[in-house]
Length: 294
Image (cartoon, rainbow, N blue to C red; front, side, top):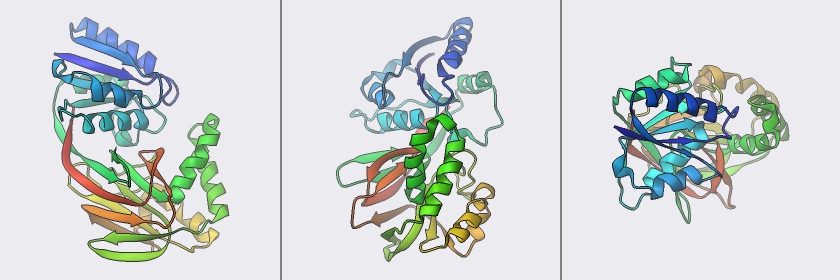
C-alpha cells in the first residue's frame, strides 16, 4: 500500500500543512508508504496528477478544499494514458461543498475511512467550451452565481462571509442576463437570473442548491431561475437556497438531465467548482461513474 498525498497550503484557513503533518505521522506509525507533495501555484495539483506515474500508488489523498479537488479531478481526466487511481479527500478548504454533509469533523476520521479502501464510483461533469474540456465534481454555474463568485475574490479577507456581502451587492446591481438554454433538444431563448448544474446537494458554504442530487445517479440537477425579477424577489429567494425550499418557488425550474447546452451572444465567465474559469457557449455532459473515491 502506497499513497500520493497532495496538500494545498493556501486552501481555506491554511490548515492543510498542519493536517498533512498529522496524516504523515499516522501513516508512519502504520508503516504505510507515501509520497508527499505540496502545491506551489494555481493548477499545480492538476499538473502533478496528470504527469506523475500513478501505477506505483494505491490511491491519492487530497488535503484541501473544493479548488484542490477540482484540480486533481481535471488532472486525472486529462491523463493521456487514461490511468486512474481512487481519490480520498480530507477537507482543508473554506468551502468543502463535496463533503459538507459528512458526519466527520476530525481529519483523522477521514483518513481512517480512506485507509479502509472502500471504493465507490462517482459521476463527473464534462464542460465543453469552444477550445477546451473542463471537468467538474460539484457545480457549473452561469449568471448571478458567477458574478457573486467573481466579486467574492476581492473580499477573501472576510472568509466565508464574503459570499453574503457579494450576494447583496450583485442583487442590488440586478444585472440583465440573456442566454439560449437547450434541454432535451428544446431551445429556450430567454432572460435568466442564473443557471446552475449540480452534481452534489450542496454548493458554497451550506447552500442546499440541489436537494435531489446524488453523486452517482448519472444525472445533472439543473436549477434555472427566471430573469427580470425585482430586487425584493431576489432577496426573498436567497434564504430559500440554504433550506432547499427554492425548488418550490414559481420563479425556479428544477430539471434532472444527462446533458444540456448554454449559448450566449458574448463570452460569459463560468463558475466551475467555485473557480471562475471557462467561458460560454458550452455543452455540458455528465460522465457516469467516471472516477473512484475512497
